[in-house]
Image 1 (cartoon, rainbow, N blue to C red):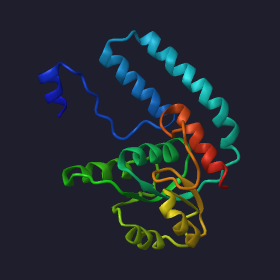
Image 2 (image 1 turned 120 degrees about the vertical axis):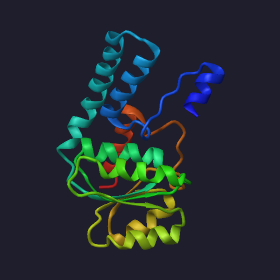
Image 3 (image 1 turned 120 degrees about the horizontal axis):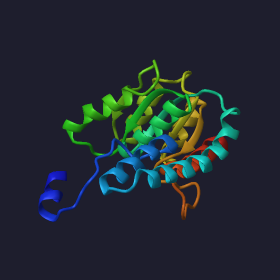
Image 4 (image 1 turned 135 degrees about the horizontal axis):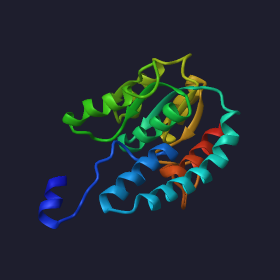
Length: 201
C-alpha cells in the first residue's frame, strides 16, 4: 500500500509498529517524520527536547509512587502495542497477556506477536487475538491470582473485578465517563494514561 500511494499520488508514507505512546516512542516518531520531510535535525531535536521536558516534569513525580504491576491489556492492536511498550520499556511493568480485539490479517499476527514478546522484560507476554467478551474473560481468568492491573474497555471492567485487579479504561467503548478531548497517544497522552492508572490505584 505504501508503494501504491507513492507511485500513484507521490505521497510519502510512514509505517509504524503501533501508535507512539510516551516520550520515547514520540521522539522516535518525530525523528522519522523529520527525516522523511527533510526538516532540519536541530528543529526536530528542539521539539523532542521540549516535549520530554514537559512530560517528565509530570512523570518523574509519579514514578516513585507506583508499584510494579503484572498486567493484562485488552484493546486494538495499534494502540495496545504503544501502551504495552510504554508500560514495559519505560515504566517497568510486567506483561502477562495482551489480548487484541480488532481484525488483523493472518500475515500480520506473527509480526505483532513478535513485537510484543520483544518488549524489555524477561517475562514474555502471552498474545491472543480475540474480540468476544466471554472468550476474553476465559483467557483473563487463566491469570487469576497473578494479574494486579487490568486495562481495557468498559466491557472488561467486571473481569477486572473478578481478578481483584486494578482497572483502567484504555480502549473503546468507554461507558463510565465522557471524553471530549483526551488521548493516551503521544508524549502528552502518556500523562493522561498515568492519571488514569494512578486514579485507580
